[in-house]
Length: 256
Image (cartoon, rainbow, N blue to C red):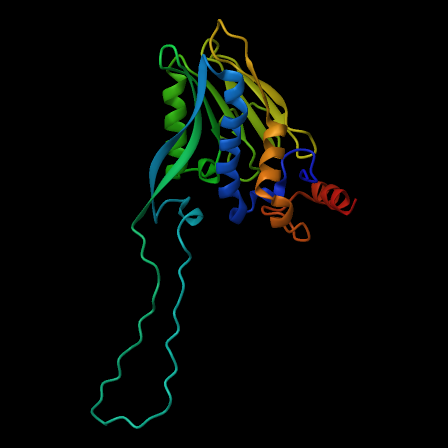
């Protein structure tokens, strides 16, 4: 059964669900693309690795919250007068750094073992200003922008700072495409929660026809495969919360 929402399901943005959804969505992208790419091209899952430290603005997404361990109560008993009372410690996790891996899709020309396109699905850390996750993401994008490789960026998260393109119209979700042969113009798909995710054309090279990628079909496939119908509690509010008009719309949709 598909999600009750026509487009991106805002309930999947909950931190407890997003990590698994992110991995499954990228895996489904590969599954959908390869039958259309092979044998000339191939979609592979690659990872970007960065380190998060406790002072990182995005560390809250990865570090466990500090917890206090209460001392055990000891039954009253007589102690020698000379006994030293030992103070009970506060026990909490001590994290110096955490290594994070974020997956992406790389499309390669098998004939020449050459990278032709990169597809990134933004994670929450990519949208936190000053975080290592954002710095790593932007560094990879800058690297691609300086190369003859196409860049496709899929943003399904409402929370956080947009990656770039401040002139783009505001929207809940957005997809950006920067063609290697036309960097001066960025193609964009602003998407409302009330809209179906679009089917877009993924460019390979100037001699090849674009490969169609139906993002709605990818989302529905992940939703069904993971059984989110049974994992999502639609009686609660989504996280982050919806605007008042969207909340009224979503409530009416769920009641129907």
